[in-house]
Length: 213
Image (tube, rainbow, N blue to C red; front, side, top):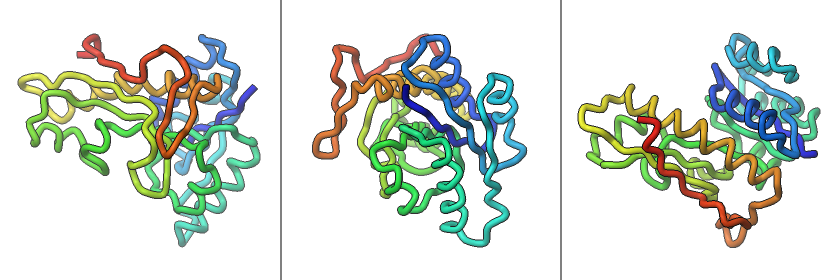
């Protein structure tokens, strides 16, 4: 049975979706721990209520980013994770941390990568006038938001959408897309070739959601 460690900074709604899916769908995995860089992260309460071990590595207690990452790595390694999952973890990780978990650290980004890397993706999508927007689950590499793509999902951009409305629609999509991608990993259905991900099933890696509008 594979072990998952989820990193959060706040509510961690994607963490909630993954914890629930793991239990309900009976994956060959368990969430070994939820770790936050903020002691007041609301997601810690949810995790504890669902019998998941929690831990905090407070980034404000460290003067340098590499010192925080080294401490975080020590805590994460205590749980011997097969996969590290970033779920609203609002820290840019150092190359040393990412390389330590190479090919076993996953993130969801709120855009259709490679479009709109970085921050403020929903407003930038609106400003660009795109008719569809979405989310991308990818393996994390040292190049920010450019790791091998595992799955993507699309939602329509509707007349009158605001940044807030569009962000809520995309987040609902993430709650479906991210657990699906994690399940593929724990079921050994993902393979990496030449920095590309292949899925060894007939299931599609693309999700178009009209039911989250």
